[in-house]
Amino acid sequence: MASAREQMPSRWALFVVTATAVALLAPPSAAGQPTMSDCYGGDPAKQIANCTRIISHPKSDRDDRATAYVYRARLYEGAGDWDKAVDDYTNSIGLDPSDPDVFFTRGRAFANKGAFVNAIADYSAAIKADAAEFEYRLARGIACHMAGESEGAIVDFSAALGI
Image 1 (tube, rainbow, N blue to C red):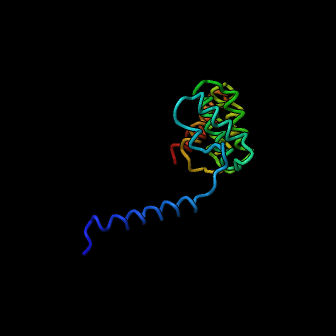
Image 2 (image 1 turned 90 degrees about the vertical axis):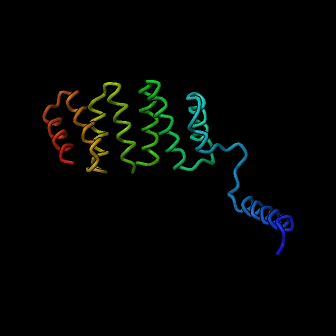
């Protein structure tokens, strides 16, 4: 039986072969092309800049751009810049209108800036896509209440309680 020392060269060779295979099989990355991991974590101003790079990079795919818009919108929300948040959520929806959470979060941004009619419309779109989501009903009920639509608020609060 070979000693551990005698096995080392074969382990090293296995490592080299594995590392080479991983490097060759990994998708090529374009120099300077941002990745989604650049878009979150750390300083918010840097995150916004990184998300902007992803959005504007010609090789970023549609899904990455839609996601970067959402990340950046959430950063704008955190800073209280509701207009920029709404714009980014709108751009994300333009790229991928199938995600009810983006309608919900844009509705939240509209509600935070006092645009309750727009918030109700977005919450309605989210509910249409996923009627079983308690939070969507609750948010629309609150927006209806804030807009003075008491009947709509009661309907949504009752529906939320039933979910």
